[in-house]
Image 1 (cartoon, rainbow, N blue to C red):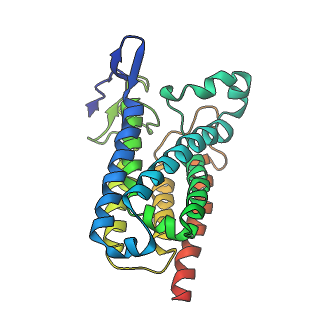
Image 2 (spheres, one colour):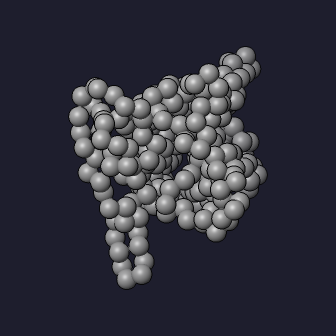
Length: 263
């Protein structure tokens, strides 16, 4: 059993400016993604042949960050707490307090990548396949931010890896956000990185990312406590996260099988 360190959510205070750990994790995530993209651009000439340049990577980070943050926030507002935020609309802008939906962020990123692809004269799948092998690194840092904020913890457990969260009662709980950091972050990053060593038909990497994330999320949701205002949607075990992940899983399978059929 471990006791959460109960981090101060503010990493640095400069006068009235407060820099939160949660925000820093997103900065680290986007910076790490940028560095991995830059490495892949130098390592694999096929990306240069498609038209990728250091400048286009910088633009892609901007598009992706904008889509992830705006989509993630709006997704959280409308998927999880629509009535609460509609009654207090100014709280929509309090991102430093947490509250980003991956599924909303995914929709925002897809829109951003579509617009970016038009600018680059690349298809959405071509851009998605470039993004997919490094995107899990951003998810990893996002889940570490959840751990620092003590949010999205799991059910109680008597396992030696249980963590006592100060806002979760006296009993140890599954550190479900760390499970997700491992599965949808590090494990998925390694798998996609290895698959992407060789050229793949368009859509394979995007599809594998969707499959890997959705399976990881669906599995972890079995030990994660659902949002109190939503609880379980049905059967005392189906959660909103699982419902939103199912279309991603189906789409990912479709993209992979479609790519194999056309190759």
